[in-house]
Structures are given as structure tokens and as C-alpha cells.
Image (cartoon, rainbow, N blue to C red; front, side):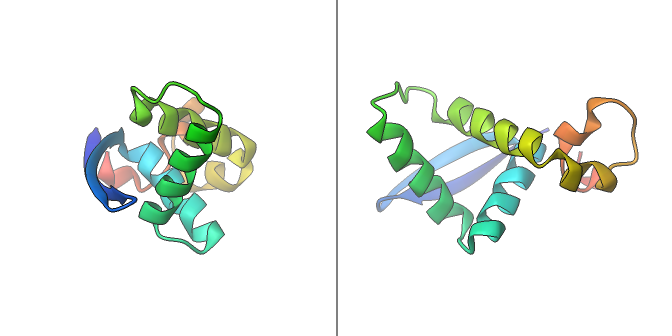
Length: 97
């Protein structure tokens, strides 16, 4: 299920639409860094821009970043799921799906 959040990047309001599992990973990333999700997303935006990568679909970029983080820290996410298979990709409360 997709969820839209409004985020400010350098003072400009934008909406980002991602699956709840990706938001859960971004929430965890922000918590681990001691930042808000908005500040984390702004930092990620700046880092991607420095690489001169194409940012026509920033939501997809956030998915890839969250996926890499989720895979790297999979052992932290796996115990929280009750299903079999690759369900750890659906990080978050199963009641939210």
C-alpha cells in the first residue's frame, strides 16, 4: 500500500509517495541518525545531486537507498515479521499493510 508524505527539501514542499515498508526503513534510518525523516531525505537528495545522477524519479531513488539499507540490516528487521519468505522487505507493522 502506498503512502504519501509531504516533505520540505531546502524550503520547497514536495510530496513523496512510497510503499509503507520503504517509509518504515526511512523512519529507522532517520532514527538511527538522530534526524527527522525530512532532514534525512534532504541529505539523501543532496548526496544524490552531488553524484550528478538523474533525479527525475526521486521516489525510486529513495526506494533503492531504503532497499540497500534494509538488506544490509536485514537481521534487525526479520524478527519483527510473522510471515515466511522475503516479507522482511515489508518492514513495519503488519497491521499497516
